[in-house]
Image (cartoon, rainbow, N blue to C red):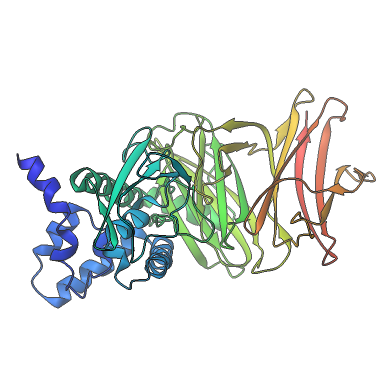
Length: 463
């Protein structure tokens, strides 16, 4: 009975807090525990501090994304309080559905349709989700709405609100852990998706700070062997972010990883520390492998990557160039790999080294055997399209061994998966005929419509 009462109360939360100026909008994101904690506060100063801590825990990236989503939901529902409605809360917490069904059970496509505002017709419809996080719902999940008073309401409010509360808890826990967003990514172009969790956790462990300090100044600790990567990418909507990968050997079950981004003057731009082993990763990362991402503005940086555990530490310093894409034609970093993994569900765009349902395992030390196929993945941004809607671009790939003259492929059309402002391009080369030694890969893509060329390079070794 106690559990049943708690579920029933979920439907009344929006009304109970509707007039509170401090949490007017964020009440949609607050867990039951957060609401209970807030209700105990007496003064405006305490409430203001609560809100500040709420956003600090989740991070600026989360806050910006949520505010954008909130506006889109309200605009689509043609109601400035649309975020409080059953449809609005579902969109903000679960994203648009994978599929919709009408009251006869007939599929009507994905996205969230055109009839969610005032004037909804009589009858029911169902939103089907097929890739929600496992701690929110497993397998295919349906939420049914019924039309009443010109709007859509939950047909089963208890069940729907219980799912939404699980989503709130999921995102709050992901934010606290600094984990990658794992919300569904199926969405209609231009529609919102759930807000991303916090992207960084402050460095509080003295040993991690000491290792970062030493690595940043060029005296990286060497007790633990560490190799690392620092790469840059852009989302389909134009957000630039950096990804980081660390590889090491030994027992990392209780180890921590640290990342510090420094500008040309040596000042810290961003830093974070996280458990080396991410227990929430699905699928789990390979032993000895760590990855994360940070939002970093355009510029030239150095990056300290460290591993600390068992009284030992190790670090490596890398360079990072974050381009100013902002509508300009360009390329991402080039990923070199020996293998990739096919996932059962698509991941959010800012998940490191993951592209929809494909997770590329970057070769961190970029050392290959002649028996390997060299898998190359890169992205092309802000290209122009021809009359048929295809990218009017061509690519040349060159290989250079030492100081020898580069050997290049003939220019050929760029073929890849187009999503918004970007195209993800995979290709591969067998290395059996390549002599052993140190090599440089050069990827050069020309946008023929604008006559602009962008080039990226990556060094690797063949043993």
